[in-house]
Length: 399
Ligand code: ADP
Ligand code: MG
Image 1 (tube, rainbow, N blue to C red):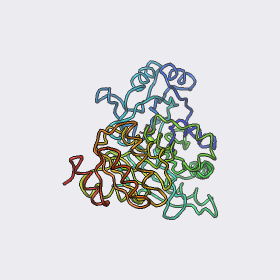
Image 2: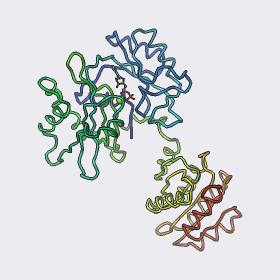
Image 3: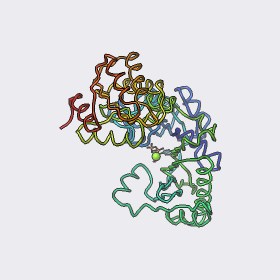
Image 4: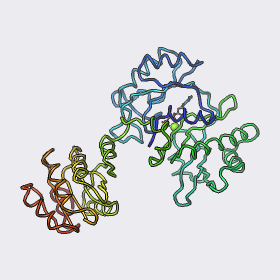
């Protein structure tokens, strides 16, 4: 689960991490009030969306040369004007995709005078089963470009969980950033605090870009992006309460209510499959025949008819879906249950696109019989290959 920048800064602040002062705002009035509580004379108005690249982003509704989603402001008049331009409008950044994201919240922050901009992140390295630090002197808005063009400017090391964070890790961060004296000391302390926060809150990702040296000689986190392990959220009600469902895919939220593993994708073929491996294979073979899956969906091993109905409804609610492929291998899951679920869903929401069903395994004959007698316009398939070919043909895709 991801949270907004202002929430991330609140979490980090509670661990003693240096972040600028700031307040969230949902309206123009609140933005002006927030600025009134800050020392000034420079303020920063920041769009709060679950995506980076806001500074260089563009608003769909504004002129092409209008300012982006992170704006310096020097007066209350400017703050009101910026808030008016941002709230309710759609910000498109390199990370949002072409559709962009609507800005519903702002963060009004104390403006910092920046001497240097660094990059620092912590993430879980699954290959070594450790938390890794990624540090670079080349912070700011183009870290992806740095990783691509000059990877040697990025320093990475991991922390042994048996020892936890140690003073030498702090020294390593300071060295990688070329810091000495007082600033090196601040880097040591920051390293300890960030790691402590990361572990304490079961984070998956913590990204500070930029980490700055201010003109006054202080290290400060000017941007913060945190991601949390969803499976550990039960241990952190304070973090769970920060969830902003408007930032998430409505279909994925609905799927999570039924404990379905669902990920929305960009293609045209809706897939209902049981088992993550079979789901991956189904997506692969759809691509092999020249079309694109609209989603990943694993209904699980022991799905009920109710769960299947919910899954079917989620798939059909996606306007991009031009055809549906149901591919079930009945092990624990019985084919007749799948058949009943599909029929119940079609009766409820109708079927406006071609549907290919491939069933195999437990009670397959009964499942086929139920579908055959339902009067539904279903294209039956014998195996995975046959099913993929038929659905790709039915949506008019393929090569
Ligand atoms: P994003 O990464 O989404 O573009 P950032 O929060 O990193 O958003 O802001 C983009 C840039 O704006 C930063 O690299 C920094 O140069 C500047 N900036 C952000 N916050 C402040 C601030 N409080 N004071 C001064 N400059 C800021
Ligand atoms: Mg940033």
